[in-house]
Image (cartoon, rainbow, N blue to C red; front, side, top):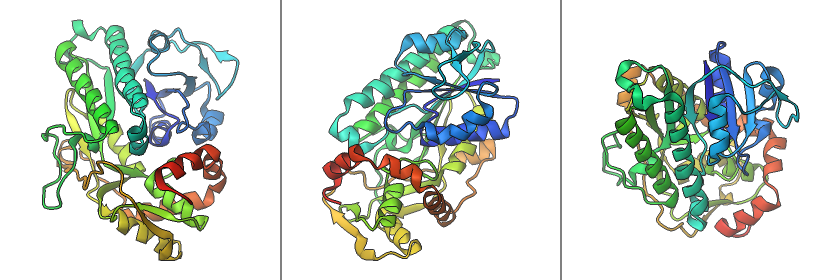
Amino acid sequence: MVVLITGGAGFIGSNFVRLVLEKRPAWKVVNLDKLTYSGNLENLRDVAEMEGGRRYFFVEGDVCDTAIVQALFSGAHPLFRRHKDLRPTQSLRCPIRAVVHFAAESHVDRSIRDASPFYRTNVEGTGVLLESARRYWQVDERPASTGNPFRFLHVSTDEVYGSLELHQAPFTEENPLKPNSPYAASKAAADLMIQAYVHTYGLPAVITRCGNNYGPYQHPEKFIPLFITNAFEEKRLPLYGDGHQVRDWIYVGDHCSALMAVLERGKIGEIYNIGARQEHTNLEVAELIVQRLEKSRDLIRSIADRPGHDRRYALEAKKIQSALGWKAEYSFRQGLDSTIRWYRDNSSWWKRLKNEEFWSYYKEFYGSV
């Protein structure tokens, strides 16, 4: 079993790579990552040193690059034993049996500033992967109903559903798509492309939509790691608007275990919401972080709200629970405490990322430190 994982050097992708290699000893992983600012080779350095050339292979490349993607499917692209190794190992001749598609631009604030990278990677990149997979697997001649052994898992987001009012029930898989940010719109477009390939060609694809993730290896531009690391450094915690925006939080380890269940047992053409039903306002999360770190609440500073800020996200995950037997294991407090410990123990990792470029973007979005 060879799995092509796109964006495997990112936050959720790197956690999923670790889970696959730990739980599925007969599987091999090919990690295709462009290494943008959020793709970090340090996330998998130990994996590369231990498994490089045997069960883990890294390729630096863009999902929008048709030549690279097609070469990976055909087995013609050189694969590398270790990150940045200039000597390619032999081509991996085992056929790719699955694609898990994480690669995406994902920061809403950045999409508001410039949407073009989001449409290129999230829409065009998904299209390149879909067409390459269709041609390689020849699924137009072998529809999903015949028991096709291949699988394409597209990792999407709850933001494609739009925003909820406080009194409304959580989103189910039947809710229409009503994206509000450029980021969410690009992911919704990718979701629709997946569904079109399933319907038109019988591509054996499934879609997952998840709530807000947090945990180890998340880039410090995101809400929880930004607030944790800023609190460590006694810098202010910039809270948009009144802070009463509600998010449905899930620990990244729980998300990855759900993805494994969908990859192996999910029904072709279906959509699965992945959620832990851990709804908290941004203000509640900020206050819990300063409480856990024994910092002053004065670090929390209200700033002007961002344009078009969705008020609430919430997911109903009964489908994946009943159909696949999955459920989240971490409570929000357990997951947050684990996350705080990881960032405390790995300060060298996040301090390298909070560089001059980071603070330039930070000041653009949030003002002075």
